[in-house]
Amino acid sequence: MPSHAPRLEVKNLVRSFEGRRVVDDVSFAINPGQVMCLLGPSGCGKSTTLRMIAGVDEQDSGEIWVDGQLVCDTVFRIPPERRNIGLMFQDFALFPHLSVGQNVGFGLKGERGDIHRRAQELLDKVGLLAKIDQFPHELSGGEQQRVALARALAPRPKIMLMDEPFSGLDNRLRDGIRDETLAVLEAEDAAVLLVTHEPEEAMRMADQIALMRSGSIVQQGAPYNIYNAPVDREAVSFFSDVNVISACVTGALAETAFGRFFCPGYADGTHVDIVFRPQHVRIDFDRHGKGPNPTEQQGVAARAMVKRARFLGRESIVDFALEYNGERITASVPNVFLPPVDAPMWLTIPRDKCFVFERAR
Image (cartoon, rainbow, N blue to C red; front, side, top):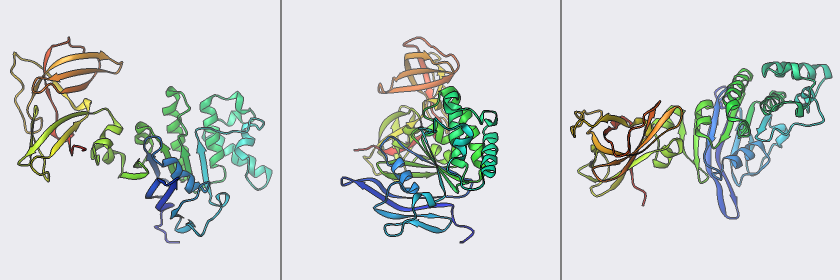
């Protein structure tokens, strides 16, 4: 086995149902100790990909490799129970008639004392050693989730597959449970494949994100790069609310309320969308119709009228109508900012926070 082989490598997986490709030529690799996230909306193929890796579904074509060894293609196939892969789902599926310790040790082979020690070790890691003799119905949802994690890790799997494992938890518990789970997984040095439809969860947990849409991976990379260098307008809007202003290219430039945007590579007459996030809109007070001085970084200030303002606890959301052409812009502002309706303001957007894409036909 080559020392540089990924722990898990997926090559050109394809799966169709009733003539429709649910997974379309998906490829990626995960190293030991790394967390990869398949992120996308419901029905994009991410859970089907996970099931094929687990061995509970079969691909139409493509290969799955573990530590440089072929696990399955369309001819050769190692059964699920021999793949050394741990599974963790939204439904914790704990056995109600078994104690916490017995749940964690279930399925392990060896001496009873060794199995009990392994259960103790993992329950200690997840902070539940004191509840080893209790039963699942005596635990909270967060505690049940940690028991499910301990049980999945008990056989020392090389790979951990996690399908929306935190979606059933209370929002207040979720962040803490995610962080605890990551710490335990890192200590076990497993390669982790997490499936989720929540961008915040992917950003919080993953070393690498594979953004899926309609069965394909449309962009793959570190969370910072996916967020700050999105491949298209849909990729931007999947991670956050967006503002979109429209323009037409002339001489590689697009004229907008915020000045000209450089559009290299676009032919004259191309309609483009300039996309930016609400948190990047800068607001300045209207000084009797005289806006802030333009800068290369901020561009031209656009005059706008407040149409609505509301306070959401951590931030305020303010909707504007641009005086230039009536286009609507939303800004998010930390803390309380509730200007009156129809108050004039000047808006600017940093050029490095804007993305230019050809408008979808």
